[in-house]
Amino acid sequence: MNKSPLLFKGLISIAIFTLFAVLGMLHLGVKYIDPSFAALWYPYEIFLAVTAVALWYALLRKEIPLNFSMNFNKDFFITLPIVLIPLLLLVYVLFTSETLENEKIAMFFATAVAVGIAEELMFRVAGYRVLLATGSSVKKAILLSALLFSLFHLSNIAAGQGVEIISQLAITFMMGVILAYIYYKTESILYVIIIHFMWDLSLFIVTAFTNADSLLNAVSIPIVIGYFIWAMRNVLKLKK
Image 1 (cartoon, rainbow, N blue to C red):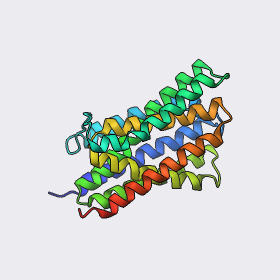
Image 2: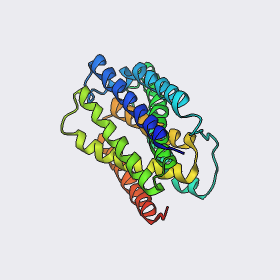
Image 3: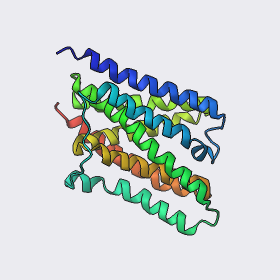
Image 4: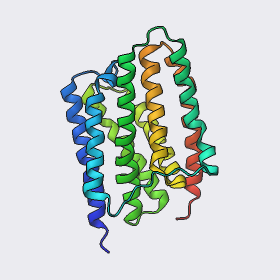
């Protein structure tokens, strides 16, 4: 079977998705560093999530079916802290902040759900799964899809992000490796969507409603680095 058409469909899906993201940021006209960006971005991100689902359905569903079941196995419990820690941080902010705005929280929630769906469909399905299905090894598919996920965030330049984007590219590459490896081990797209959603929601709310950026960094960066080291060690041991 000629696997090139499937690879092309995966890459064209990511390219279309990225183009729409850039056009959306240019149309919104709000700086990425603005604490309200994620709230104002929610209708655009919902459109991107719908686009991602439509691209998967139109181009990939026959060759790349989705598994939404969750197996509560060893790998699930090893990775559970990566869900629970941002959840605890989120609960802490919701109970201690005196500047909460219900409308903004709803917008942040909608954005985080849409980001989780859109980016996991694009980079763990149209990226990792397509690479795997077209002959790449698991190791190569994980690393290349993580690189694509990282490079996608260059689109934030359209929202005025400057040199600080370098650190975001590094973090998103690490998260790309972590999420792709978890997807490889659990085979559940739902689980990686939940992880992605929890991280983004806690980031949005902590940034918007507190001055605890240092706390966020103190909590999130060690977790990301720790799980990245764990994932990379296991990825590099893979023989397939």
